[in-house]
Image (cartoon, rainbow over all chains, first blue to last red):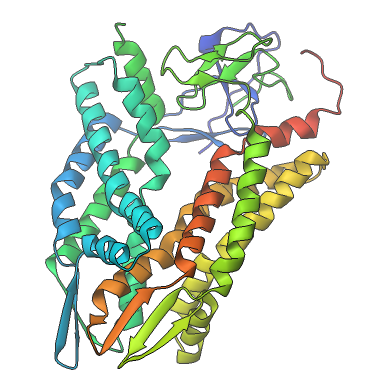
Length: 217
Length: 216
């Protein structure tokens, strides 16, 4: 949905509270708040300016806590067992990093550890902490820095890419061996859904406005 | 949504849009620098050294993509015989097996997406340098696609790490990563960083700068 505004102001006074700019093309625009749950676009380059989310603080808090709860189970419990010619082999997400490290590809192992374990964990911790504070209208001095850290880490947590990786692995192996899905598999799906949900329900603009409101320093 | 004026940018009004929290802050045009009062991030009219950094990263990705595709990425050993396969070998294998869907997914994530990203970033960078003003809107869309698809190229690395764990029947058959893996990860990383350092506003700056500007 594109929010439309009639009659552009012919003589703009540069009141900063009435203005916004497009991050994609720098066009100066009159500030419009999208209706809850709606999205507004730049008229010149169609960049998304703001996607409003309903109950963003509550939803992000709930989903990030869910993700944190599932996290150890999804990473350390076996995701599946491969069964071929009477031989069985079980693997966890964590084993993937360890075996890549052991095979001597330290750089690849590092990237794997960061994108599939460390960054997703840090993102969930940051979001849970930030939304918990905003829930109780507390804005400690370090909160803006933490939200900035979250924004920078956002695309480096790749649980959903890993999910597709698991599916591709299953399709690759299913005609060579019997695959048994273990408890970690279902925990990982739930973790991926919670982590994805927590970033979808996050309304960054709303979070910044809340932080600005509660700032006492 | 309404613009104040068809081409007036925040920079024209001496306002900088915070890279992190998107607050508009007035900064002196002489220094073009400052700090965001809301989030503490440093402010600039445009991302600093955007073109140089993006060129460096795109060229890095281009160089790394040769070893990533020529060297073998996966080693399969079966009863003492080991065979290595490149990314393309793996895809051809799937097509020969008749698994077209999965072959297409790997082809897209490992070959088409990285190629697409590098070619399109080169196109966008060249069009800024030579001030090609046509198709501006399409180039903006192209950049947003590049930003969005960047992370999906990691797919192959994840698949190999899982296969390495699961297909590990000592003395019978094992799978492990091979020499192209770090180069491939390097291509993905440098294209992702290139999308981060690139400032899409430069496209529009180059596009409208030859028209008479009413205010500066």
